[in-house]
Length: 256
Image (tube, rainbow, N blue to C red; front, side, top):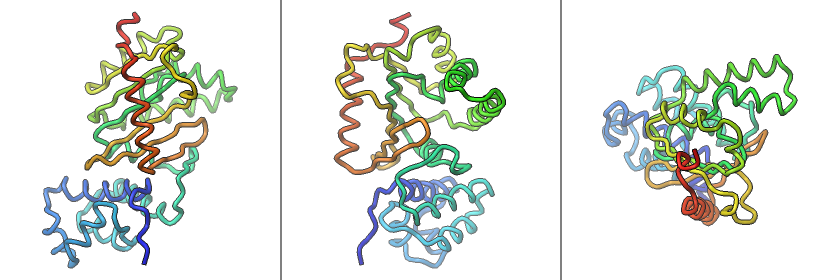
């Protein structure tokens, strides 16, 4: 029997979430396996993403650990996504996105934003200007602004987040924008990459999520959808690209 690819985005998010649900309750792997009546090796395979648990297995674990309803819904949604094996995510397709899940489980995020300040760092005025420029209807703008404000309040900020901005993203009054973001996120690093240092073809924004165990997933960020990349050679190329850009970057305060 052929095992499924070990680094599918949803499988990685599921395994990390199951491990976090257990460790947050100070329970050892063997202890939980014994209480569930399964082999510790099987639970280890589930928590490392080497074998997918069934929907019933996930429900059993979450029920035993007594996770809250929101967490239960989030993790069960991830398990259901495994059946589609879809590396694409369309904006608004689900109430809980894989991007949000990876933000919750990542220990570090590396981000390249060549043209626009990333959404987690945007002020309401900045977001409003972007939405207006995209010909979004006024009522829809208000709804989108409210939805993003709710997301910001609920966003975890303890993760290390390194952002490289293209010089074209710094037009206008970007200094106060970034100063405000830096003031609310203690582990945020922001640098600017001069246009002259942006090598040919490096125009698409991407985000690299690093989770426990040095496992990496790349999210290619498009206007209405996200493509997740987990193939090792491709991930290696994106990590190398980030390092090259970072070598040419300067602290944003230096441009003020």
